[in-house]
Length: 345
Image (cartoon, rainbow, N blue to C red; front, side, top):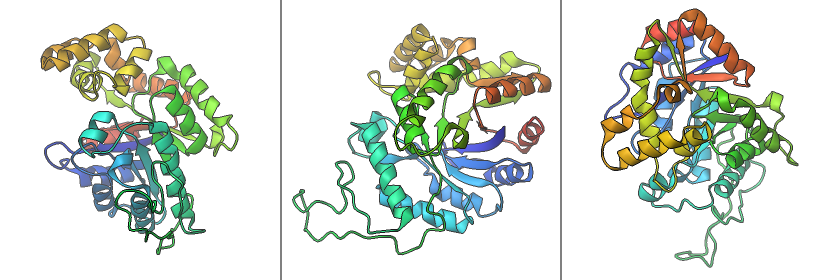
């Protein structure tokens, strides 16, 4: 089992003490450091800033939103960071959701699986640097079609001026639903599981197996990495740990998606919490945030929480490893926690 520090995205300001956290992660044997983005801080700027002081840990985005950058722009950022880090970059991509994509980026959300496939193909073509990059679209046509609105007809196929350090920078995809997870297994090098649940482990493996079995699948299960976001808390007071993490569960289930389409809510429904999900969403939409938080059952929080004494946490981590998880992405916010977690694996 490997550990990764998930710095996530910023709130109203930068993450306090982030440089010290990154240094502690590297010093204590963490495998990777990740950043995220929503509609505030971006993934690449802080990753490059904090990663510049490291020499060993891998540096990943979890996730860079597809709609934030054209695929060629993402590939430029990736090849740049990979050079600067000496080949330690992991490209983590995700589609986000319709509220963000259409509300923040002003782009259509439709056909997220097809867009992901096309996006990944273009990124790989840029990194391969074998021929000028072309794409027939329909989502990211290159060059821009001569008969498209506003076209000058002067677009030219290009390949990157800078030679990528690695043509095979690993691409990991954030995915939650069965079709998305299966496609991830087919076309990517790893899966970023934002809400992994042991209760669904067998189901996850079935979804992954479907992707690996497709003609032309990029990896085998043995070559593929599964990274699960999880809160790991060493404590004698599990009830307090559950209480601290209850607001986050409520936010993602009730407030991070539209009523008609919330991937996080759908996943928790698959875990068997359909009634709670419906109630949490109803209260959130009514502006009754505190009541929504209170409506989250303890066991729902525990689905994505590893908590207990050191021995209990070690035992739980072993269960996650046996279920197929290769990396735990933790959101530690102090050096002591990083040191404690490093001693557990």
